[in-house]
Image (cartoon, rainbow over all chains, first blue to last red; front, side, top):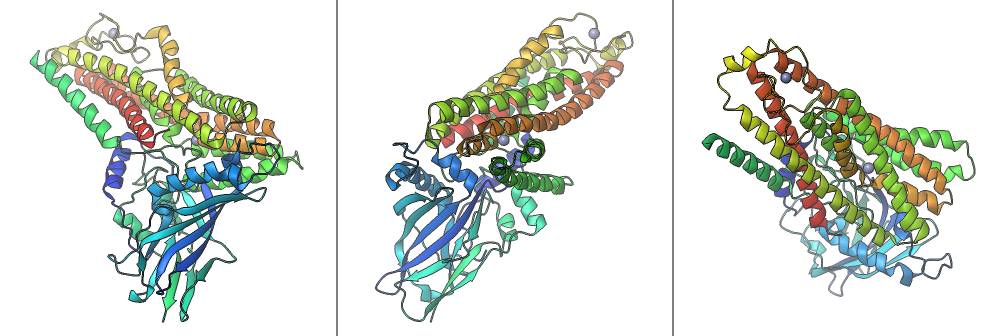
Length: 227
Length: 337
Ligand SMILES: [Zn+2]
Ligand SMILES: [Zn+2]
């Protein structure tokens, strides 16, 4: 993880202290949902990044759970309209989790992009898996030339296991010539870190900074290199 | 009297402090459907590695479950593997307080139940939890064809009910235990208390310790635990309080099995999980009850301060039940439906 998380860690500290008081041992976080992630980096006419368009494919078990009862006309197919209420719930809930998406200049804490509420969100279902599509616009366009720019997609608490998809992992849309992508997949956690993370309750969203530092190198990083 | 008021105040304050400290754990899910099993623990110390390994295994088993459920359609031979894996998932997964580990063990310590009852209660809670999951999916998914969104809301309701009940049970225990402890405090010097002990031919840990325990034979019932044969009956409230909150893992597996056209397999898997969960909680409960029994024997045979110590432990356990209920209730309310 190159980008410093902008989250507060105060709550985590309290939750951690509290958890230690109440309970000896617990296994909460460990991945519950697996996601294959694809991202398009959108540029405006000035050559600045204006937003990110994600397509996240969920694992089969979670997909089956999520789609239950949504086939309103019972034709065995799930249309975009039938899935729309679920898409709505998905993006609304993701808000609290910063959409697991971080944009910034590597190594500089202060320079990061702030996302607005998602637009153009919808789901499709291929018969076994759901894919959530949504676009995160930036409140202000982000100039990728101000430093080594990167987008990270990951869940620091490891409730969701994000993998960058094998194909079409990331695309530049309307980028000026001279821009390219450099993709670094999360290496996966070493056992000790995975163990540590897996012990965080699924519902703790703010990890203490020293824990966040441990996860360094474990974010899925999409570097946007513009010359 | 001043001592009494002070103690009450301190107990109340401690309870509130713990509750406030803990109230920030929201149990939301990043995708809004399928509320995650809540947990409040972060492990550090020598056992951290073990718990981490448990968590990793749990995750592995959970993923493998979906493959086996799907495989069962073509190969019924996968049934045994599925049962075994479900059992292991339950066993490893029970480390989360969503499965009542904290509540059941603290409850047993506070009320002084026997080892055998503790084990029965642990399994009972696990099975009530499995049956709730089966009942919810059967009614909501199979019969009513409710959406995952409605299901998540329903889970939210029972979650809140469960935590409120746990908090109430805890509050009642705290009340009873603090009265007992307060009554104990002003009773003379340690010597006076100890003097009563040698004549004590029987063991006390099988019933709720009344305010008098360790100091004579006036066995007035402890307001919180009426002791004796009635305690198991009372314990069912704790079993239900814990059990009405279904395990999210079980819900997802059940719905997945239904979607694959092998619902019965999901039910069997959920019951196998309950055996595993029950076993894990029973082991912890037995350890806690055993430790408490040991302390109770010390208290019976030894100094009066040991008895006070035991009652303090009971009070702390009662506080833990109450705090856990409040913490989880706060989290559930914050997460909303
Ligand atoms: Zn006695
Ligand atoms: Zn569970």
